[in-house]
Length: 116
Image (cartoon, rainbow, N blue to C red; front, side, top):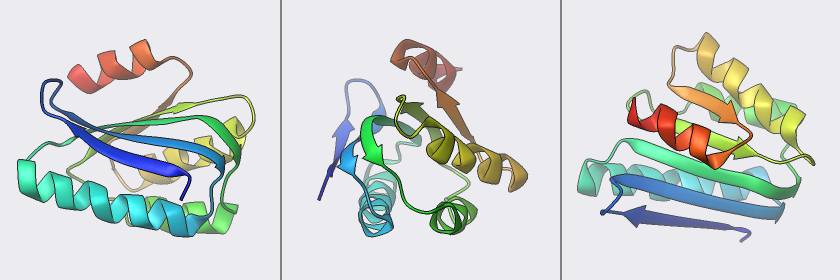
């Protein structure tokens, strides 16, 4: 699976690192782990590093994924050049569903937003 999910108690956040070809099955598996960490530790901030993605899931898969994202998890996604338009679509879906999710091009900006 080209994704890693981790919990950083010293930072008070969860982190997903994604790279390469990243099918929706990997996104769903990571989502399950994120929800488990959220429930186990009460941490509600997530930083997703998607800068190394070469291929993202289809737009319809991203739509379904974003629509079902948990409301309580504030999510910052750092995108790279290869899939920025595809992954940025999830922000549109999330905003339309009143979810806390934003796209960034720099990790520092993403971390600032998460800490607001």
